[in-house]
Image: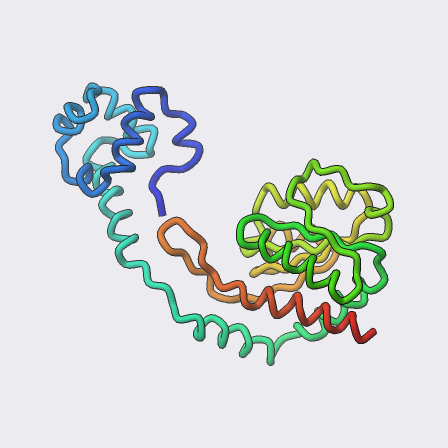
Length: 241
């Protein structure tokens, strides 16, 4: 994971931003440079570097280099499990959970709705679009909404169900969409990896699948196979009602 947060980056002035860009592009080299070498290389003063380090949450340049080296080592150690491991983990848990009951409950809720709205961002957004196409294919009018400010006609909001996809259940963009759709009267079904997440808690009902969350460097690469299974299982239950 990066040692720089969004809050840190937006606090940098012009010189500090130039320093940040250099370190980001030359992290292996910067981790072993002396402060004077870095100052000469980036054409800034040592005082600027020390101020930069403090904004990055370090007391000095030595502590900053230690954190940078640890971050580089963490990236080297990243190992992604085989897909069979994550998928087996999910299906073993379904045998000892109330997943089947939850999916049937969701299918009943969706069956009674006139329209289905899918939302999600990133890879969850791609699956939300897939879900909208899949549900439409079995006869339920469905649409995928990416923009929280996208105008939705009253006839689509009335008696609607929103299906929310989010691995972490904490995406602020998606939370904003949910709040807006709830105000407009849509019932919320969330599919998340954790039932204790913010999105799960503010939903009318939640289906959680609990697989080990995996990261490769700064990217969330948690398997999405459980989400596809849940979406297709709900849709097939609807088609039989």
